[in-house]
Length: 125
Image: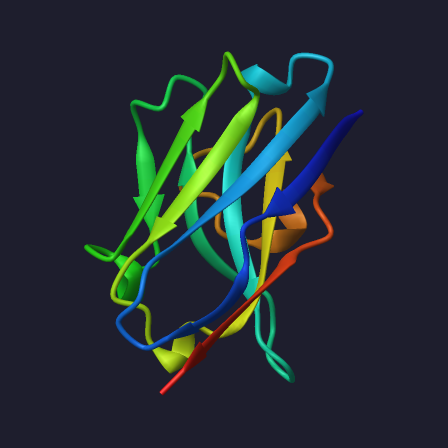
């Protein structure tokens, strides 16, 4: 089992930056692929970014490329999502996920085993 807890969400203005954190605990969590998803009201859960266990391979949703950066610190069992140039359309609950066998390009939510509860990000115009 892996437990995931997100933090760092909040209310910001368009163009602002925000950094989300995901603290992981549990057996061999540092070896898992980890990722960020988001879900806006009335919409399906959407892949945002993922990172392999070493941090050497990442993958992003096209609309966040160049604005969002995913990273992880295995010594701290923590993954991050640094978001810049935020837009109102980035407003959503952001959830972190982990899986022992997913690939970095696994974007379907149902393919991920472990989920956090989510943290709200609201971007005002």
